[in-house]
Length: 378
Image (cartoon, rainbow, N blue to C red; front, side):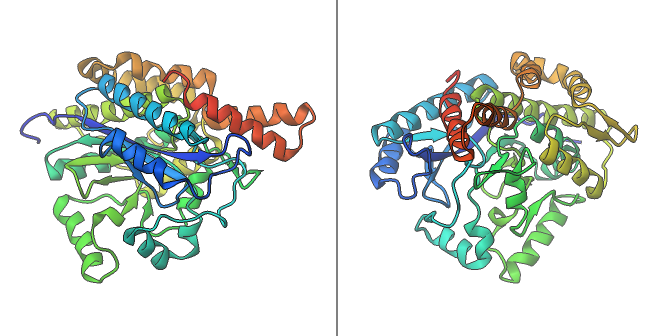
């Protein structure tokens, strides 16, 4: 049992794509002055990503969801403003509707160069963006225990965030094609359960000693104990195009961890299901998003997502009240009604095609929608 309540502070990282608002294509080689300007204005809260057409922001450690929202809104606004000054725009989407990966240039940094050498073409195909949420859990063994239990809920959170239905100009049939791309890379996906931090560290050290990786930053699991901070980092989610949707998912993740800690404090543990079963729901969230339900393994039934969401909201009600984020958590119902970015991208595409647009023109309309929607509510 944990001796005291974790601080449950959090930080959020988002990755954006840089696009030319005229061609709507990715900017293959953004000017160095853009990143320089971002680094000066945002003082360590922005960094380049593997591809030059990407840019990553990260909030400082935040004491509440409201603070995290303010920080992230400021970061989105600052990056968007500087991008416009360079005749560019940002989109918060996990894949670009029609851009191809072959022309993209990688960022010239030793870590990225090594990644490209080690992984080859699968690394070059990583034209994908995500949202990562860190939650402070000081006790290392508690981090592992909560990771084991939280795995069950990750597909439920992914379904709320899907924003990658297109790949290279084609509808993929998946709401989160990003994960399909990421699955080609080693050490991704759902982590195994571990007995404690010692067992996790033993397995990590086996890879380090074998010379395969340098440290835990190269375990790219859906959820992982951070190698840099005393946090449990959720990585499964697509980036939400709307800021408020991403804040809702961060709030749900935060509340879920507190709920699991609260149960543990009362000597109750969420049942740990095999990775095989959790991965089935992971696939369903990737493929169908909110549309086709997930499996409730306690009841051994397929349950509509709307019903699962209400049960989830009820589970974390006490925690949302304690953490002061009831409104943000309840906003999940609005996502269910308005649908995710992936659903709306597909809607915009279909409407354009029905109006006589070519496939390329329809994809460009989707980019226009993404540019506008990325700053909605910011």
